[in-house]
Image (cartoon, rainbow over all chains, first blue to last red; front, side):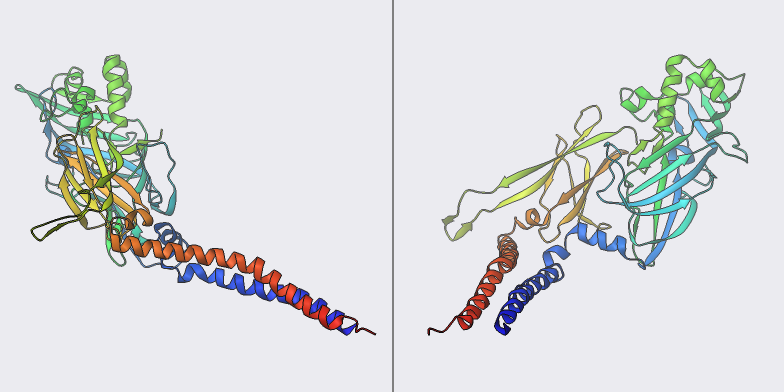
Amino acid sequence: MTKLLLLASLTLIVPGVLIGCSQQETSQEPVSDPASQTSGETALDTTAETTEQPSGTLVLVANGEDFIREGFTTKDGWRIDFENAFVTLDEVNAYQTEPPFDPDGAATLNATQEIPLLQQPTTVDLAKGAAETAPVPVTRKQAPQGTYNAIAWKVIPAETGPAEGSTILLKGTAQKEGRNVDFTISFDQPLAYTCGEYVGDERKGILTSTEQAELETTLHFDHIFGDAETAAGDALNQDAVGFDPFAALAEGDSLNVDSNRLKAELSAQDYQKLLKAIAGLGHVGEGHCRLEN
Amino acid sequence: MKSKYLLVLGTVSLIGLPGAVLAHGATVEYRQVQAIEIDATYSGGQPMGNAQVTVYAPNNPAKPWLTGMTDPQGRFSFTPDPAQPGNWEVKVRQAGHGDLVTVPVREEIALSPSKTKESASLSRWVARGDRDYASKTQQVLLGAAGVWGFFGTALFFARRKPE
């Protein structure tokens, strides 16, 4: 009887010991395997799960580029200079994404890190400062280090201030062939963009510990008025409204229009061009954005 | 930024000179590498010829790893550093137009251009494979052999002695 009990015990214990040893070896494998440690996916997952990462400062800026700061000549020959270019930003979020977000594709943004940068409407004047002035600072926030390769932002109607009721308010002077037009053009079309990585002379959004990194919202106003320095047959100028249709609505030397009047008095073709141009304003430097509304 | 353009990616195999040739002390060898080819076009389909290209490696995405220009057809090719698997980024710009594309490069692909590192990679892969295979085999064969050994030993001692 004793021998049978011994037999039964050994039958149960030995396989358990063998399997246990085998599982222990398997569980150690990822730690000792340099190949798995160097994979990008593994590194990102580890980063996302770490609660206390080194952090730096993300600085959000808005940029109307030289077109707004220096002025420019439209595709139809108007020299326009801006006194103000008010834009009201809201709900700006910075993201680290994996895979990197492609605004030209249909895939959704897959964030491994999300930082709310701006959670209340903020109106900025893109015409502020001289031509060589850096983009307008909007806000700054502490954030874990990493590459912030996507940003989402909205343009909404201003609730207060000189641009109240407008998502975008352009004020300035247009000159052509001896005629001067002082203009105030107000748009009320809300916009929501999801953008990929900034494209420009420098890289932006790469935040290392204790440093600061910029993220930029860029608006390309040459999409509305066209650019005399670009070929007339270029898609930019083909799709732009120009300034002639606006000038035609001026009363003497003064033009003061809002979206309702533009819809009522522009030709249907020009109005559709204008809506499309406004929708395409949002960029990240030269990088692309997806219009979400 | 005036209009969108597209970057179309392709992976091509660049094959060097066929075989080794010895002549007057010179040695020419070949190796197969896998390169990334960028095809940059405007939205209208026109090639972005002679555009500025900047390549960023995964290990230091803030610093250009390689710069160059597209050819007149808007094409540019490069071979990633085999020691740096991950997301390679290629920026193409021309006169206010620009875009950036991300090229995920897996480790086994990245390691293939270098003979030395390819060998190292294969050795490591085989070693991992053997280890995986052995661990499963342990669970089955060693367990069965152990059980049978103890069971047989117990039966030996438990057998009835001949009268």
